[in-house]
Image 1 (cartoon, one colour):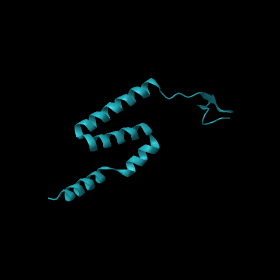
Image 2 (cartoon, rainbow, N blue to C red):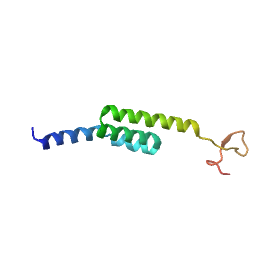
Image 3 (cartoon, one colour):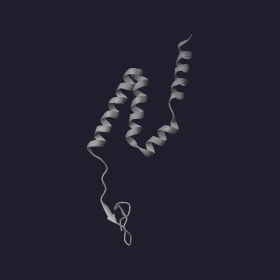
Image 4 (cartoon, rainbow, N blue to C red):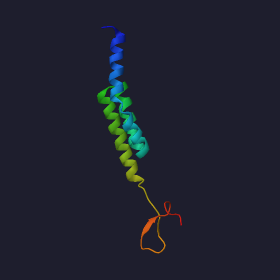
Length: 93
């Protein structure tokens, strides 16, 4: 089989692996998950399945540790006329 045909088969397979809608969704919702997705995809593409997944797991563990060390915090303020407390960045008044 000619090399160009094999290359075309590989390219079509790789394009079917790449889920654009999922990438766009992850980019909008959570940038860290998007970065893990990109690392897993590129690592698997260029280094093979074992190394790609190992790198993706390592990046995931690093992100979990980072988010555990620096959790989301919010300064709360009471909404006027109620007993509700909300983030002052969302409700500046």
